[in-house]
Amino acid sequence: MLKVIKNRIEQGHRTSKYPKEPIELYERFRGLPKIDAGCADTLVKRCADACPQECIDTETKQIDLGRCVFCGLCETLSGGAFAKFSQNFEMGTSSRDDLFTHGSLPELAEHSQTHFKKLFGRSLQLRQISAAGCNGCEADTNVLNTPFFDLQRFGIQFVASPRHADGIHVTGPISKNMRQATITTWESVPSPKVVIASGACAISGGPFYGSDEIVGDLNKLIPVDLYIPGCPPHPLTTLHALLNYFK
Ligand code: SF4
Ligand code: SF4
Image (cartoon, rainbow, N blue to C red):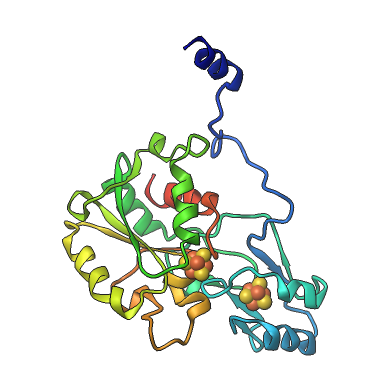
């Protein structure tokens, strides 16, 4: 017992001070890209042709963050002249269109923010739906329950039953087999409720984009309130989006 207490004293307080204090991520982390719209058309086309997600629009020179898997290929190919990934992990949006970006994102829509803050500002219970993802998104969402992030200190927690939830947090590209289960779970959540699409798969199909075996876009099934891009989204991207939208 004394060993445990000694260890506890030595370990100290490990919970992150974010969002009260800024947090620095590992230098190789890829967050919101900075895009040079003045970059030569040929270079943009080269990046677009090589992009495994076909998410670079050569006309507008925008990247669709809802489909991007942050592989960094466009940055490497253009030597940072077209796209350069920053360490900004704050990428949640309340509109799908806002994920088509030149390198900046608008504030989360104020009217819906206020609405949801009034409803869930003090307590938010979410039911996780793993809809055929690779488990990357699920693993990085689980991390939020560790002492470092300690999601529950903000009054947010994941619950087992949709009937005890205020909304659903969906990951994965929604395979055909998960289609009805996703709808049924959403219907089981009492109103008012929220829908969160987390990760490239739930937003657009991600790496499974174009497959006949998936729904690929949660918005096709049910109206989405909050989009969290990434493959998977960094736990801080999820935390920032949840706090900004609901707290
Ligand atoms: S980082 Fe995104 S936009 Fe760039 S090549 Fe990879 S998937 Fe495409
Ligand atoms: S978005 Fe990426 S990490 Fe998440 S389930 Fe899809 S493939 Fe896996």
